[in-house]
Amino acid sequence: MKDMIHLYWSDAIKMIAVRRAQGFLSDHIGENYRPGSLSRTNPGSLSDWPIEEQQKLFAIRGNTEDSIGVRLSTALMMIPIYSVSGIFFPTEESFESCQLCPRENYPGRRAPYDGGLYEREYRYKISNIS
Image 1: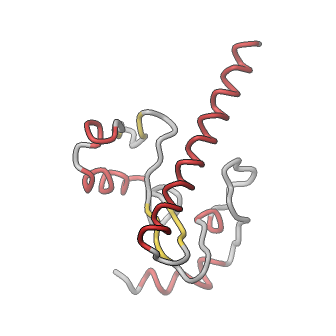
Image 2: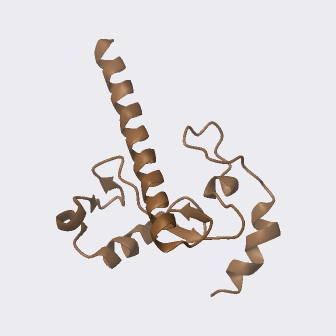
């Protein structure tokens, strides 16, 4: 039982560290580049950006294992675990990919699910990009 508690708290600390690092990066971008309000998303969080797109992000960075110590497994998972990829982007309206994700009780949820948001706001815009 003691090992399970240690694993639980270890995971919780890792998750806090990742969230703090994301906050630090967002603050750094805001202070140094002044893009205005920022939102973020990552491959696999939306049906329009599937997890397979993770490979393209890693290709942009080149040899990520040597440069930042993170690699992509054949199953498209990042190693070490608790690594994060994605993009920050300037936006006039706040956006969280969680708004388009119907998974309930997700501990990392940053915004409530809005079942009609995609149809109201993004379907037309995304279909006209390609």
